[in-house]
Image (cartoon, rainbow, N blue to C red; front, side, top):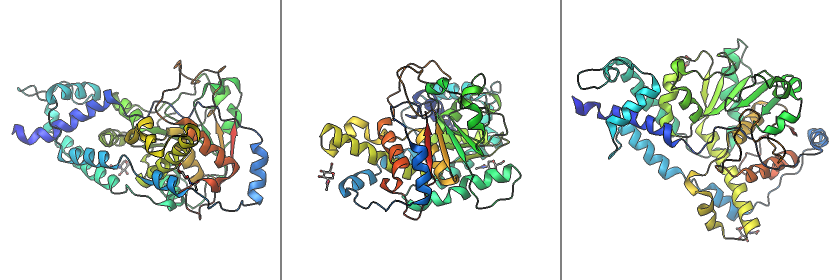
Length: 396
Ligand SMILES: *[C@@H]1O[C@H](CO)[C@@H](O)[C@H](O)[C@H]1NC(C)=O
Ligand SMILES: *[C@@H]1O[C@H](CO)[C@@H](O)[C@H](O)[C@H]1NC(C)=O
């Protein structure tokens, strides 16, 4: 009897572990960095009329290097272990108790072994089956597909439109604001301007109350990493809605075990809780790795092979802000970006007292990407030539 529950217990234990390990994706959204923004308004105008010629002189060594999926082996192993429900050599029972405390599942019910009754409930068994099915389905899409940008309307906008009672169509949002969380927003009064966009995308649940003048109050999409949802899953009803329960969430999975949180939370969410397609994640990862490697070689003069030891190879990850911008490129005719800059005079986040940059991502590399995005998007590798970039403007 006991044996048969082992897989379940270890899964739960993992979820507990995830709470403490946390993925390398910080609880923050695209802020930071000294990306100087000027004269984009003008660039934007001309780009609509004149398509710049495609740039084909990418450095093939860099492209090949960036195309290596460094995290693949580790992720495959992690997923295999999750599917088997086995995680050898860990203190299961104690950790499970932690999980249960965090996750509010059937806190009181216990049998004589001290094992929560919940483990035997049909409800939990269904989660377990769903967990395996969803995880497998998701993991199968770990591949490179340069055209995935063209599927974002179908993958993200159509379900959101349908939730909002709109007819689904191939139309993109006429204009989008992506709002990062940099403290520079406190120096501006962009609130009304931000809310004037057809869609407003906010990052990692940064609150808007008390900051409406600076950041606006409208939210069309709440973009988060799965670690945020994992933290929410510890609260009753998976409360993860600083913008109201009716606002759709789009989330990327930073640890496969977070699928458990997704399943637990998805059932209580009124609005869609969408997971980014892994092909889209892979594309973002390649692009940021390319810019990071390029900068590394150019600025340090070191060999490419040394990049990994400086950037923690398999753990290297793009930021939530970067992927939210990528999403906006795919679902909007026009993109305005706020709160992605940094200033020594400004707070790090507009909504927290966090002091400094967490060194989890290569923000400088992401700024190099944003620079190309504004000035010459064809200089961005890996995105299909068929994709038409919308005009992008960064606001300080
Ligand atoms: C491409 O990048 C690699 C690695 O930085 C470098 O060794 C090589 O010289 C570059 N090739 C060209 C043609 O620039
Ligand atoms: C998540 O919830 C939505 C709405 O209730 C549902 O349509 C969808 O099938 C759920 N997804 C999973 C994987 O259970």
